[in-house]
Length: 117
Image (cartoon, rainbow, N blue to C red):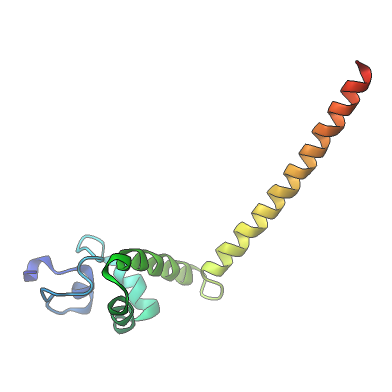
């Protein structure tokens, strides 16, 4: 890459972007916040090591996962994405309870309706 087209990671780290930059395929220059958030939580060296240990075909998905987890951790330093999962599980449980209640009411209404016919 030429210096004007450095990836977001190399721009953030204020370094030249080498041709074989591990970050450039996943951190485009027009999205600097993506790398900044990941760097704040995991550090550039750790992210680089993680990416190097993964097969090339799974790296993009890993970066998206790291980005999501880092954003969650920034928003909620204590629980991170676990807090979101817990919230969603609570919502699912409430919805399942409401569904069961509604199904029971429908069954009751159907039996009462069939008694009158």
